[in-house]
Image (cartoon, rainbow, N blue to C red; front, side, top):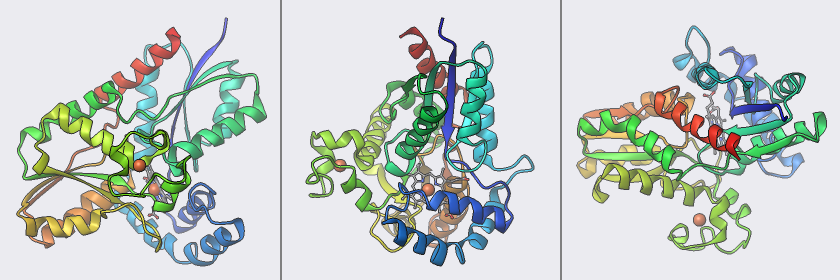
Length: 339
Ligand SMILES: C=CC1=C(C)c2cc3[nH]c(cc4nc(cc5[nH]c(cc1n2)c(C)c5CCC(=O)O)C(CCC(=O)O)=C4C)c(C)c3C=C
Ligand SMILES: [Fe+2]
Ligand SMILES: [Fe+2]
């Protein structure tokens, strides 16, 4: 009989808000070839020469604004998700982070020490990007190849239009939708446009035309932009959000290269002039609240929207450790067990 185990994964946070810990975290994160995808010498020069000497104090200050007595929201809420999924199950449910702790190598080592030989790997990213889903899966598979190559592994695929995930998103957001709004902004983490083109197997489809993501194409299997639009369409259809009352934007860009547009920070400043006074922001790229939702959107974004003439602003919380998310994860685990 196979011994089953489940591994939940997310991005990870610094060990603390101290500048040296933040620098260490940014070093591991940004030296990842799937995050800054320049040739190694250039990547090293950019990260070690430009980013690490200047960015850590700014990032540390941002983390200080959201840090809780228990630690980073992303990590502590992920631990709650793990504990809730584990409750009532008699198989190991583990949690690891792509960067920082709990580290993938150690967590896989512990699962192997518990004799797990059939593993369900669950990256908690709804969408495929080489800088999120792909890098964590590649890292997990490298570690399994090194520690237990015979492991029987199943991967949870990006669940951007999974009906149960969409149902969870709508259930979680309903109290906010019911309060009324002028506009809902679906703000997704951005990626460089180059990353979309790299992931396009035809090298001719992604971003070749503005509506590339609307037509049928095999590139969409790995097209982050297409998948973000598909999530938005599905939520909008299920919740009955009018076409003229929502839009999509992309946040958190880094560096000077073009990233997916429109940029959330610009959109937040423009919306009040278009008559939007009461705004809801939803961030479906994140299953769990983190620096990018709690600080960049709920603090910085709110401030710039209000400064530009907006009157009411709310960020709809991510699914976090809510019953709808736990139900969704348990549904996928039950499906895998039954296979
Ligand atoms: C939702 C998936 C994510 C994608 C895709 C993604 C791409 C991506 N990110 C950076 C650079 C940074 N991201 C940072 C924080 C951060 N990013 C994600 C998720 C995705 N990133 C999360 C969940 C978080 C928050 C982590 C937390 O501890 O709460 C940061 C750190 C903060 C900062 O200094 O701004 C950086 C840097 C790039 C370059 C990129 C794609 C190429
Ligand atoms: Fe990021
Ligand atoms: Fe596309």
